[in-house]
Image (cartoon, rainbow, N blue to C red):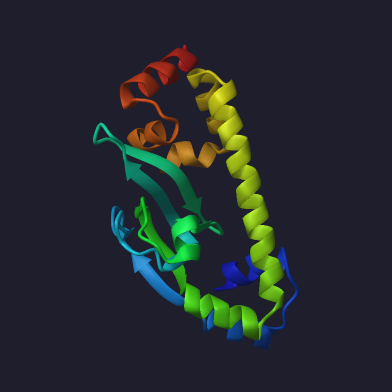
Length: 190
């Protein structure tokens, strides 16, 4: 929980007592690599915070291929925000990319948390603003950059992903085939 406390301190100021209370609203879950936390078609009831490990959000496209849309590593949140906010069926699945420790909160508990600790409203606002800004940049990169530029940009900005995440998952995130990603990587090495 120290890492969660350190993370919160980057955005808000809370006492030790407040932190103990805040943490009580979350469930801790240890998940194994490739374990699914949420499947397409289920009601999205939960937000996940990664304490340790890596999760990914993906859907199955019309060709039956997994298309990764988002990652969450340490100190990042992940959910299907649209479905979570409306308590609808999700169009995505969330899966552990590696063994992970996560904090989970459902909407009802989150609302209780926000009522008891209004400072968490500020925290979540700041988190959502950052996530929205990142999504805007990613959309622009997808339109503006060649596939090679996109991979170079991604590997420069997030070098730890290249080490931690299987190549086929990175390829699906960048909307490439694993074979084409291999060609790009070989070309960049030569």
